[in-house]
Image 1 (cartoon, one colour):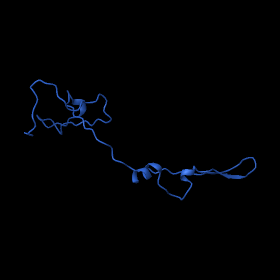
Image 2 (cartoon, helix red, strand yellow):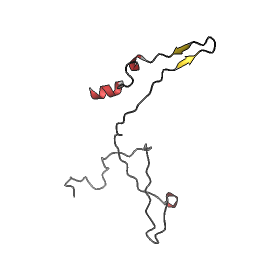
Image 3 (cartoon, one colour):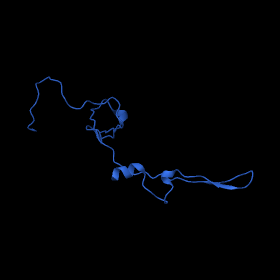
Image 4 (cartoon, one colour):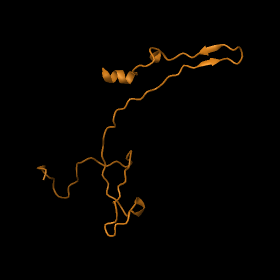
Length: 104
């Protein structure tokens, strides 16, 4: 036993409510039939018990490459380079605003 005081029998629970549409569903099927050992799949399912787990996704770093293209004009032959946004115009690699804010 957990040592927790239990509520009155038949009283509604006060735990987390299950959501109608979870972000991800993982189906678990028995490794084999308990009677004969035959392999089973979700197509053989006659029902299931549900449990939902709430969690925060891992923080991952994304790398965005900005490419300033040089284009040759078909009319006069001049080559013109695109300007990069001011936030990425420094060195060849830098930290974005979200990562800088996280480090502060």
